Image (cartoon, rainbow, N blue to C red; front, side, top):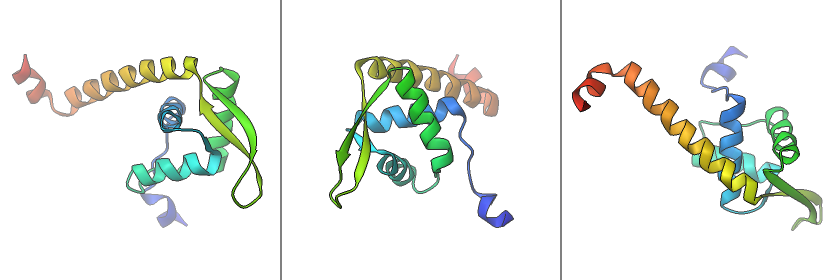
Length: 119
C-alpha cells in the first residue's frame, strides 16, 4: 500500500484550481475528462482523484469562475460539462502570475547562486 503513494504528489487547493481552470481554457469538459487531461499533460505524474476534483469543481462553480451544463455523452450518459467563464479567465491569469512568482521564489531558494548571478 505504501508503494502506491510513494510517487504521488499532493496538490494544494490553489494549485488544483489553477490546473482545472487551465484545462477548461482549452475547452469544456466533464470531470473525468478534466482529470484525464491533467494526468496526460503532466506526463502521468499528477493524478487528481474524484475526492479532490469534485469539491474543487463545486468551489470554482460557486465562485462563478466556471459554469456547468448537463449534457448527454457519446455513450448516452448524462454528464455535467464544465466551462470557463469570463471571471474564470481573469482568475486564471491572476493565478498563473502568482504561480510564476512562487516558482521563481522557490527557484531562488533552491539555487541562490543563480539568483545572485542574475542581479
